[in-house]
Image (cartoon, rainbow, N blue to C red; front, side, top):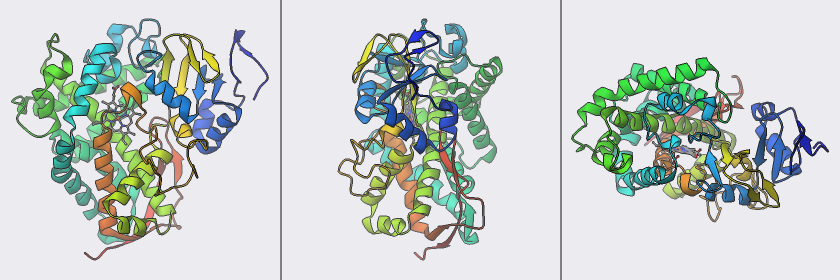
Length: 434
Ligand code: HEM
């Protein structure tokens, strides 16, 4: 920690992190970086990003609850702090919909968020699990099971995530070209969102605007097909409940419906693929865990999913702007400050969790973590994500035995900025006899 109390002559009310910088910290062994932050304080100032980093469980919870009053995501349009340095028109053009979920706040956001949560009901999720998730997961295992070895990130995690969400949208999930296109469009969006809180380079803005618009066009034929709203897929639900999603006063078009479908593909693809890869890594590195999960049955897999999310959730931090002076612990964060909720650091806070860095299948409240954040902007796809992951890992446990890292191949590394995951995952295994 540096002794300074000012940065560029601006007084900073908390300890200043004097490391190689946020980008270097997040590029390397994040666990070490998180402990470095924690050792200095629950709230520290990071000069490279000009942001306050919040790493304690209690303060991240307070931040999440304060969304909309104390803080706003940097993705919500605000004249004071233009997202990615864009004016409103340019920013809205990137997402092509004035009611795109991550860009709206206030009543519009509340209404739409409520819709997501209610529409993805337990009954709907159970039918999607049966009709879409399970068949996709098993079809991907069929492709490699007889070989006895695979690179499970490319051969399973990266294939199953986008195909599951495509199936739920009602798209032909076995169309490899379509899936590759959707993944690339999602990547363009994630790249753009990486510039949260700072000005994005024009070529990044241009690519995101163009590719997200192409994503809407790609989805348009499926959107038109479902206009009756009578199907059981996600796009049909959007048509059916469009007034609830967009508001009575909003004259929505088929392109707005396509934008919500595109948003769900973007939000639910890489996050699921990354969590799948990280969960597989945990299985590969904890001998005996797969057998224990099989013995515990579906409840065991549910707890395992939560532990994978807690320890290695793909979204490691979120960026917020303080909407006023905000008291966090014993410091006052000045109005307008950029604040990063360091969720994975908070998920390992030793003051909150016993054996914080280990998998604990007996945790009393396994869902008590911030992989989906919390408060009014908590991920509304969390129920869907959970059921996807349960079936994605369930299929592996059902079909595969004796899963081991292939020591003759390159070892996995923990990589990625937008969505972090372990890669590559070279593994050997046997097929389980039914
Ligand atoms: C493991 C998988 C997933 C993880 C870890 C995850 C995580 C998150 C997080 C941390 C946020 C909060 C972002 C913020 O406020 O800045 C979020 C928001 C969101 N997520 Fe997820 N998510 C996952 C899967 C999904 C799925 C499957 C869907 C839907 C198909 C989805 C839809 C959304 C939407 C629409 C938002 C924006 C909500 C809002 O601003 O109110 N997510 N997600």
